[in-house]
Amino acid sequence: MSATRVLVLNSGSSSVKYQLLDMADSSRLAVGLVERIGEETSRLKHTPLAGDGAERERTGPIADHEAALKAVAAELAADGLGLDSPELAAIGHRVVHGGKHFTEPTVVDDAVLAEIERLIPVAPLHNPANLTGIRTAQALRPDLPQVAVFDTAFHTTMPEAAARYAIDVATADEHRVRRYGFHGTSHAYVSRTTAELLGKAPEDVNVIVLHLGNGASASAVRGGRCVDTSMGLTPLEGLVMGTRSGDLDPAVIFHLARVGGLSIDEIDTLLNKKSGLIGLCGDNDMREIRRRIDEGDEQARLAFDIYIHRLKKYIGAYYAVLGRVDAIAFTAGVGENAAPVRAAAVAGLEELGLAVDGELNSVRSDEPRLISPEYARVKVAVVPTDEELEIAAQTYALVGRHG
Image 1: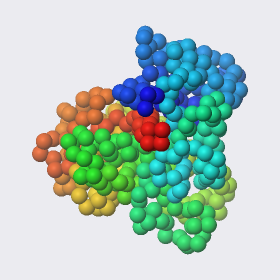
Image 2 (image 1 turned 90 degrees about the vertical axis):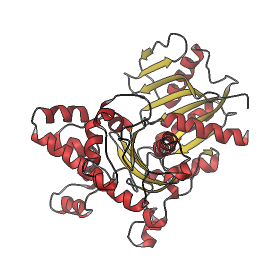
Image 3 (image 1 turned 180 degrees about the horizontal axis):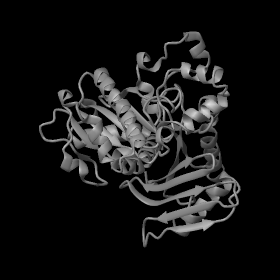
């Protein structure tokens, strides 16, 4: 097909992140962010990646997502990359929750919009904003394919034994209560790139992917297919995160309500925004936590130890689930940049074939790389994630098939 460009949109409740990519060579043409939509202090940052590549910034009120996308279109047009370009093949949208229904990227139509809307109760913070982004883009370019790429899709290959909670089946089905998983585009990209790093096909490799950012999740990927993941019905389950608790006894909620007198909304805020690392030591930036540890701060040390303890438990659990592990891949902000986290996560797991080479681990790079010694039976990799490229690639492949 002659049109090879894909605009990737990630619409939040008050922001729009975007990238324009050319899938002829997977290059980026422009990146940007609109934030504080609906406020007087809205800001648009736009960086064209051709020419001088100088960032442009404009501030002032941007009333809504329609105004935001029009502003983005104007910035792209100023670089000769407008939404009316015949080289634009499609717009790919990140959609957080696709439930059981959406197992792959999907061209948006009225039925797709209706299903995304029906899923709002299980993704109340994300799906409404994702819908707004899609509808706004449709209004601006009604003739152009809009493709929804779902965070949950990669995890729909989980067997029922991994996806089901052990609660009454009728109640679970009525309210769509099951484990969906998130960060799926990242897990898909990183597991596939890890296989490439090993010089193997994805279907021949078993990988544990550790996506460690402010939000964090682990996945067990067998032969390119997810068989388990740490996040569940919502992104709250699983690992210790920047502000989220991850796993805890569900009865903690009843205890806080009955004994502590907290409302459901207060408990929700506590577990999602005031827990994890920030709840344990007051910081959710791993760099700051490590600085405090170096200065002898015991509270920061305990937070780090709890974080690593949970991480090790998941590595061990997913090793058991997979039976054979070829590689463990660290990705996202903490996974890509925090060498002490990587070293601590595999320390003491030599009997499982895991080890990290201190010198390789200390190297900073934007490239996928191995940090395990030659002799290690299980390779340890650092793979910078690229969710926008993954969304663009899935979008372009789908439009190409149907174009």
